[in-house]
Image 1 (cartoon, rainbow, N blue to C red):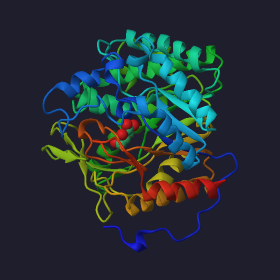
Image 2 (tube, rainbow, N blue to C red; image 1 turned 180 degrees about the vertical axis):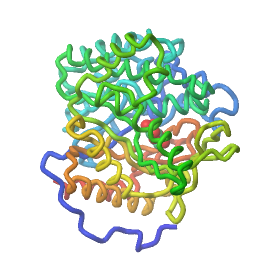
Image 3 (cartoon, rainbow, N blue to C red; image 1 turned 90 degrees about the vertical axis):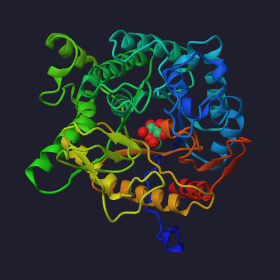
Image 4 (cartoon, protein in one colour; image 1 turned 180 degrees about the horizontal axis):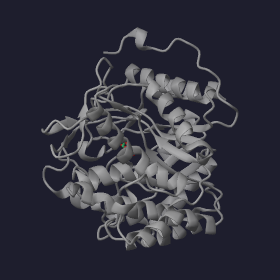
Length: 443
Ligand code: BGC
C-alpha cells in the first residue's frame, strides 16, 4: 500500500552535466502492427495455448507503430534526453520495414530526443535459431543494413538486450520464446548471442559508430546463509547470471570452466572470444533486484512468475522484509549500489563508463506512488555508486508505456504512462510527472 510517507521528501543529489536521462521500450512489447512485419519466434510462442498467462498477443500491443507521433510527444513533454527503443529484425526484413524506424528517428530528432536503438530485444525472425552459429552472422548483416540507413542520425547503439534472460527464460526454462527447456544444453544460445554482439560491434564500427554498448541484465547474488553449500550455489548463480555474460564482453574470456562447455573447438571458442571482447564505449546494465540463492532443495520453486525445476544446482529463496512490486520482486535500491561498486572492483579499468539501460517496477494505478518510491530509491542508490567512484553516464527507466510483458501478457504494468488496452488511450501516471521534475532538476 502506498502511503504519503512513501513519497520522497529529501532533495535529490545533483548529477553531472551531460548525464543522460531516458526511458526504454522494446519493439515487440509496444509496436503492434504485426501484419506489417514478418513473424518472430514470439508470434509462434504466443499462439500456443497456455504460453502467455492472460492468453493475449502482441499483435496490437500499444499500437506504437501507428501512434509513434503521440508517443514522441509524450517523450518530449517528459523532457528526457534520450529514448531507448528496439528495432524489430522481422520488420526490417519486411518490405518497407526500415521506413518506420526512419520516421521514428526523424520524429525523435525533431523533438530533441536522442534515439538509442537496441538491435535485438528477443524478437528473433521465425526460422532463425540462436542454437545455430550462422544466426550470429545473419545478425551482423542485418545490423549493417540498419546502421547504413539510420547511422546518419543515430549516434548511440545497443547491440543486444539481456542475452542472459533470453538464454535462461527462452532456451533453458522454456517460459519465453522459443520455449525450449534445454537447461544447460541452452549454453550454445548464449555463446551465439555473444558472438552476434561482437560481430555487431564490428559492423557498427565499420559503419562509423563511435558510441556502442550492450544492455546486460545484472544483479547482486546473495547467499541464503553462510553455509558453504549455500555460498557455492550462490557463486554458481552469479556465474550464470552475471559473469558468463559480462566477463567475455569486458575481458574477452569466459569464467573458468565455462569456455569448455561452449560449442566449437577450443581454437574456435578462443577466436570467437576475440570478437566478443571487442572494446565498447560504454556498458549497459539492466537492474531490477538482487537474487537470494541457496543449495538445491530438491523441489520445484516458483520465482518471479517462473517455475524453476528441481534438478537445478541451486534454489532461489525469498528476500524477506522488503516491499514487493506487483510482480513479487523485492524492492532493494542499495542492490544497485552494491552491483555497480562490485563491478568496478571486479573489472577495474576493463569496465567502460556504465549506463543504466533499464530500471523499473510493475504496479497498478495512475497514482503510482510505489513506483515513485522505487525509482527515487534507485536513482539515489545510483548516485551513491557514482560518489563511490563508479563512472555512470545515464539512467533509463523501464518503461515509457505499459506494454506486453512477455509471458505475463498485459497483467504487469511497468509504464510511466498508463495504456488502456481497449481504447489504446495513453494517460501519464503520477510517476511521469515525478520523472519529468527529476530530469529538469537533474540538469
Ligand atoms: C526486459 C524487458 C522486460 C523487463 C521487465 C527486462 O528483463 O528487457 O523486456 O519487460 O525486464 O520484466
